[in-house]
Image (tube, rainbow, N blue to C red; front, side, top):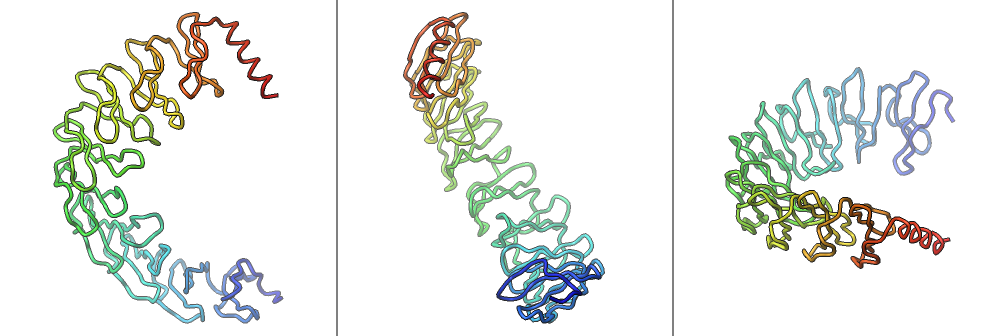
Length: 336
C-alpha cells in the first residue's frame, strides 16, 4: 500500500478512488497504478466517467484518466443516465458523458421530470417561463408556460395566464386551458380532481369528464384511497372514482378512519357515525366521539359506549364504562 494515499472508495472492475496526504483525490487501478492523478478537490464516479473538481471547477475524465471535457463548469450533476446537468455561473445546460453539449448553457434551471432520471427535463429559460426538454435537448414544450407539473408518467399539467391544461409528452393537448387550478390526482388512479368556473368535477387522463363540474369542493377521504368527499348545497356526500354518489349529501364531514378496513367517519350537527366505503351505514350518526382503541373502535355517546370491530360488527351497544374495562381486560388476557 502506497503511504502517499489511502483508498476511500473501491470499484473492483475499474479501480478505486483514493485520497492523498495533500487532501487531494485521484483514482488507482486494481494494481494500485495511478489512473487519475491525485490532484483533484473531489472525484465522483459516474457511469463510465469521473466527475472531477479542480480549483472549484468541474469537468469529466474517462476511466483511463483522459480528458472528456475541459474543467470549466461550476457544477456537474448526474441524472442516472448518460446525461449530466451542468452549470456555468447562474445558467444550466445538458451535457453528455461523451463531452457533447446537448444544450447550450442558457437555462435558469433544469430538473429531471422523473426522480434522478433523464427521460425528459423541466427547463426554465426566464422568470415564469418553463418548458420541457427531451433527452436530446429538443424543447418538446417551448419555454413559455408559467409552470409545468408532471401528473402521471407522460402526462403534464401546464399553466398559462392563470389557467391550467393537460398535455402528453408529445405536446398534444388532452385538456385545453380550462381549469382554474392545478388538477390533483385521486389516490393511485389515473383520475383528476379539476376545477372549472369555481366548480369541481372529476376527469380522466384521456380527456373524458367522469363527473360534471357541479361541486363546491372535492377532497380525498384519504391519500391512500380513491373515495372522495364532495360538497354540494352546503353538505358533503361520498363519491367513488366513477363519480357516483354513494351517500346523500347530508354530512358536514367525511374522512377515512381505516382505509384497510374500508371504514369512514361521518359527522352531522356535531355528532359522529361510521359508514363503509360503499356508503353503507355501520352506526347511527349519534356519537360524541369515536376512538381508535387499536384492537377495536370505541364510540362514545354521553356516558354510554358502543364497541365495534374493524369488520364493522357491533360487539356491544350502549354499555357503561365498567363493561369497556372488562372488555379490555378480556382482550389483554387472551393475548397473554
